[in-house]
Length: 260
Image 1 (cartoon, rainbow, N blue to C red):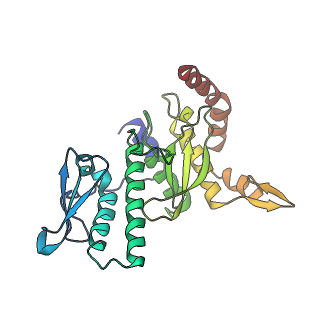
Image 2: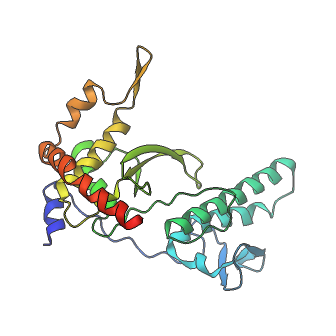
């Protein structure tokens, strides 16, 4: 058992089983077929020579990766819809799905460290895997230990130079619903960061979701009494705060020097 696995085990965290592989050739929900072409980059095409008269979509080759599975399902929904009668309502729905599709494709590309297909919208990457820590593993351990795995959110390493961790709300390009996003300072993604420290800051940001800010006497209170009381229930609270005060600033200075 490696050191990271040992520390995760302190939280009684059980890793999930491996996911089954997903075929890139057919929609999971319909009989829409996918074919991939290296020349396509910013467009998709549709014909109706597929199985049982279902649409067959021509997609860019890069969309064959498993990461693009949600985007492929949106494309399949679009392909089925354009078969129907072109009413005003239908046309609006077709445009909406297509817009969501390309927004999602751009988000997946930027999450992978690639360029967006369009510069109209700024897409911030969601990248939980760092050099030393996978934030999804840390979040799962904290969520299971302190929140009964009930907390719904995503997590990423922050792109902010200066390194503050923070919580924000973003819009999911697939469902168009808002979701909580935790961004963690890259000052924690270092060799000298113990697991209790990275878990501590993740727990702190999770509490911002559990206990949202309140307006008291006209003032916005972020770290109120309830927040501070629960924060101190973190089993390694003192150790984390000591590391946060003494080591994190040094790590951030090194990062900023490298950026310059």
